[in-house]
Image 1 (cartoon, one colour):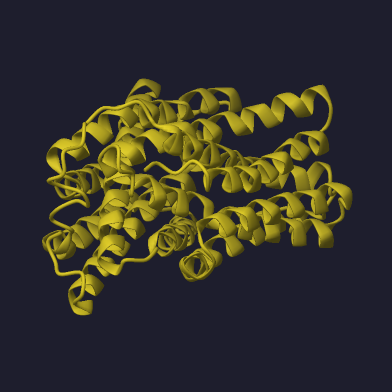
Image 2: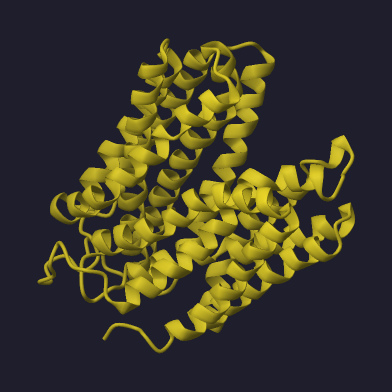
Length: 387
């Protein structure tokens, strides 16, 4: 490690820098998401056409998963996090300038690729900071990603309200991101956790990483469903008034972001297994509440609990993966992310398919079972840690 883990001032600087990188990542993604309706109108895309174009982003993300772990292991997370942060924000300009469907698809594919490169490298940096603190601090980093999501959405609303084009909007965001990199790059973690130890760059995930991946898979199915289907659920099942259609989503996002800032303390106090069990039960209980009592007050309360439930699962899983003794942190994170992101990608379409065959309430019941699975897998995980 490049800094003595005992000295608090040094580790505080590293923590602040990695926090800024997480904020940068969330700001870029939410800025793009806030302008999707504008870009859809500009490009004349139908709903189906937009859905097809949007597939380019997860396609780039998934393709980068095996590459990113290898690159981080070879070049180190410091070089990759700086390069990917610059490229990721720069690609926003390409999206803003895109005039044809093909150009937009290419830019979104590259945006997804850079997104995951940044994700794996900055989480590897976070693992390095955790090694300095000798306790879990991962969830607070992910909390700042969520805060950046709110900031990006707010900036997007201002830009839309003032009829500012995506190009100028994204140029502003890119300039802010490059300033963050300029201020922070000297203080990124120079040597990754475990560097110098003889670990293979490619290994099949062991039982420990597979268990972590399944837990991430279940949690990200829940997250993806909340992102894509919460408004639909409130509109079609809860039959909420127009002003309350987004209330469930806001309750979920509020508690998911807020809980991440206290999740590290709870994890240190009660341990990884107990937090996973509690998280799974919160998720399951919240969804059952919204399913059994489909009216605004209990449904909002239920989504509130779901936000608490999913808030700490992925950060804590990443933290555990980074401690793998069988491979490097970057490769371990990429392996767990690969399994987890499948849940994020497959979950929302699966909900729609089940809803078409039965009902939206039945499909949400499946997501409640995912929450229960997290609790059960958390318990099973305690007996399958790699030596």
